[in-house]
Image (cartoon, rainbow, N blue to C red; front, side):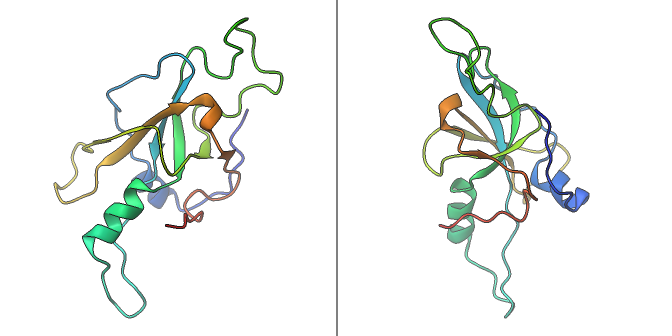
Length: 144
């Protein structure tokens, strides 16, 4: 399955999904994803939103890049045969994940300022993948 997303700003995409070792591997039927980082928000009036709002948006983020798929993901657990519709996503795809749930953690991005946001990771069950993003993953907004 190839990722057919519309090209976005490559520098922004690299910042939103930095290349970082997550420190964990998915087991069983789980999927490891990296959640999109959020930048400081400045409104059109020049007002910077409070840190609490940014933290809420960070942890409610629903756009992620698939990092790794567990060995039993997208397979029937009794027979180990692939699901009839196949895998819902592959490593490198951008997907939508549930707002709540999953195991989430932060990893500092090496070489970045301590004030910069860390990379965010999540492990979720294969059946919790909501959708594959086929447009610009930076343009998709979640509602809080």
